[in-house]
Length: 108
Image (cartoon, rainbow, N blue to C red; front, side, top):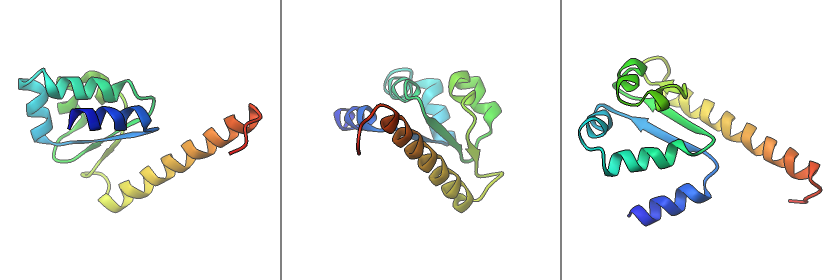
């Protein structure tokens, strides 16, 4: 499973982390697997935390780096609205990559 996760992280352009009370508990008590997975995600340029059942303040106590990324909260937005906002981010990322490739003379 970890190999598949690592492979996915290497090839992904964006990561979404669903932050739940269970995840915070895991990060607080088990610094091995959960911490390693979070570290791998934090190395990504675009990582979007989605808070569900927890606040950014609670996340900040466990992982200030992840909390500093901003993100979305199901308290403030519906899942549908969050999905639309994430789709917009992916679209912007795609447009930026296309622009960068065209500036470097690469056809897609």
